[in-house]
Length: 77
Image (cartoon, rainbow, N blue to C red; front, side, top):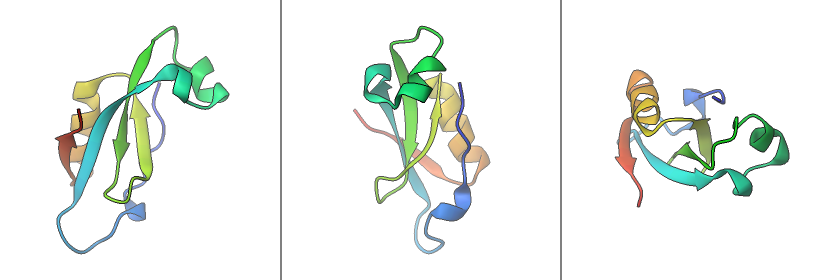
């Protein structure tokens, strides 16, 4: 499962940091839950304002996705 990653939504000035955090599938909208393929958790990428930019199935993929879009990912615990 992957959702689009639109890098145009973030600010262009300052550091390009995004935050990667674990999200419970049950906390996602019903259509996203149906696409989770039985997983209990996914990984969300958020900008500095808290806007969710992407949801992916794997933590490593979330970091790779951020770097491929010229962001510096930071893990949120």
